[in-house]
Length: 83
Image (cartoon, rainbow, N blue to C red; front, side, top):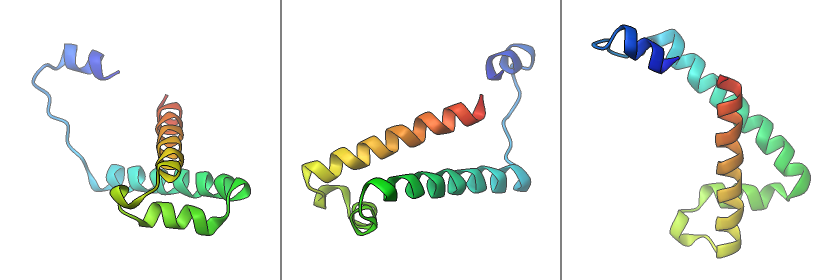
């Protein structure tokens, strides 16, 4: 879709309006809630909260692996929601 718009309107500028900005953040928050709900079934919620609250350089290698996996899954979900 973006390529088609760029081809037809090469000088178009992407503008964010209040409605779509709020929609974007609401969708992201809902994805996070759904994902955390599923993740808490598999892991203890305290572990998840600790991983999300700490700085990346303070995480253990195991915790970094979990966070990488969560981010990858969230990215895949966000792409599937848009298409």
